[in-house]
Each structure stands twice: as structure tokens, then as C-alpha cells.
Image (cartoon, rainbow, N blue to C red):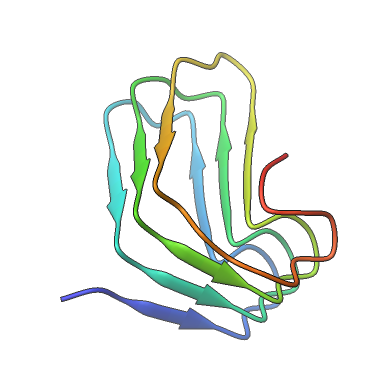
Length: 83
């Protein structure tokens, strides 16, 4: 069953230095940061999530890279869907 992550004072989900995680089919709405932030991780899979009306990006990756973002959707994120 997917999670609904709404109204956090920061990012909806943060992975920092995480390798090999799966974030799938979650709803991330109205968070003060990004819907999902992946920092300094690799081989993480961010698949089929929905991010709406977050104050930064819907999905943001920084750092080492080689993460998979596929089939994610969303609208009204202040800085766009991907960053």
C-alpha cells in the first residue's frame, strides 16, 4: 500500500548517502521542501510516485548519481517536477 506524505516542514522523503533503496507509488503533497530528495546516493529507484504542490521540486537528486527516476508525475511544484 502506498504512503501519503503531506505537509512536512521539509522534504517529504530524504535519502542521504543511501544506496539501493526503492521509493515506489507514494503521494507527496504540500511539503515545504522537495517531494523526494536523493543526496549522495546511487542505485536508488524512484518509480511511479506522485508529487504535487511542494515548495521546491517534486523530485531532486544531487551528488553521485546513477539513480533511476521513472514514471513519476506531479503538478504545481514551485520549481518543477525534476531538479
